[in-house]
Amino acid sequence: MDLALGVVLGIGIAAALAAVWRAVHASGRTGIPEDAMRAALHAATATLPHLRRGLNGRTAERAVPNLRALTGAAAIALADTRAVLAIDGEGREQVRPGDLLSRLLERTGDDRLHIVPRLVSSDPTCPLRSAVLAPLVAQDKRIGTLIAFYRSTGRPSHHELRVVQEAASLVSAQVELSLVAAQEERLAQAELRALRAQISPHFIYNALAAVAGDIHARPEEARDLLIDFAEFTRYLFRDGRSYVTLGEEIEHVERYLRLEQARFRDILHVTIDVPEATRGTVVPAMSVQPLVENAVRHGVEKRAGRGRVTISAEIVGGDVELRVSDDGVGIERERLGAVLAGAGGGIGVSNVDARLRATFGERYALRIESELGQGTTAVMTVPNLGGEIANPELAVPA
Image 1 (cartoon, rainbow, N blue to C red):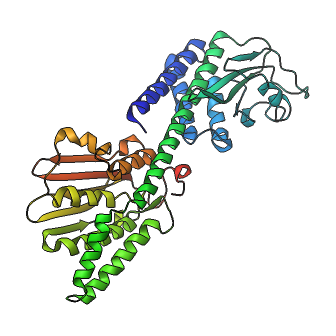
Image 2: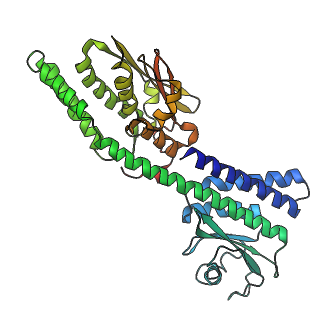
Image 3: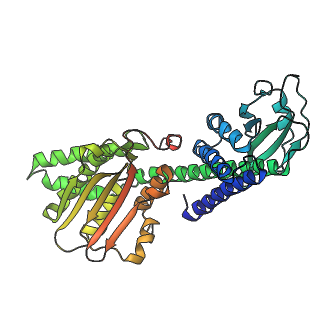
């Protein structure tokens, strides 16, 4: 996600949390301010994870109990622009979609707060007597409605209205964050398709030239290189998966490096230290090879004499940290940001960075460390998921 936009949305969510607490505290629902703060923040933060994947039936079902606890309403419902997605609390059976809720949603054609001081239900046993309908807005478009129900007739208090408004703002901010993340992921996946199609003509030519040079002198080696080249290209297009294990990525990188070593011969030295314990974790497909290619092309290839590329991984807390290092010419400090932004026409490194952030979050952004004349290290950190995708709803086929 774009850093500036992510910061803005993050500030918006933090502000919404603070506003919710202020509204709850002002309402006097609990006698002790500290208890009010803890209860409000617990309910609010418990709501957030469920909405990180957007507003749908499943996420709404999980969010409404916390929203009801947050607002103190007798019942809470969440709806998108077409229908009610979930309801929790008293009278939920009496206000099922098709009756009272459907009629209420007809009132929500604009982005204003709607107050219904007296509900008329076809079921006389329904305990719900009034309602407040707050719009949910993301990216300047209405995406749904939060409906709070109360047991008494009449207009809810000013503080109750504030709590509902701020709860709706909290939901809206989190859904907007999920929409931006999904857009970022779709863009990254489009770039992944371009990355797969962007096999460097120079690399193809050099790999085949290395094979041709070995056909007579070293026929067995030439055959192995042809197999590596075939497997290398097959990996790029084999099934369009967006996520693979780190072990699969390393095998792909090993093929790539064998092809490059056939060209550089004794000039390129490679060290790979990726323990078995790290190889089962999930990473975005084609996330390691662009880093290694960058180390070869812009590090080793540009230096005089022998060069070394080192690939290592280790478990750090709950994460796996992968480091791709070269002892090449290095990058000027002021150019590091431009490299991550994809300057120079290449999308490889910036694409990896974008997909890491979109899939795992901002704290998993790619890091590049470099010293002129000393070399460069790309650091890729991913959660040690052991085969689980962090954001499966964003794992669209590439």
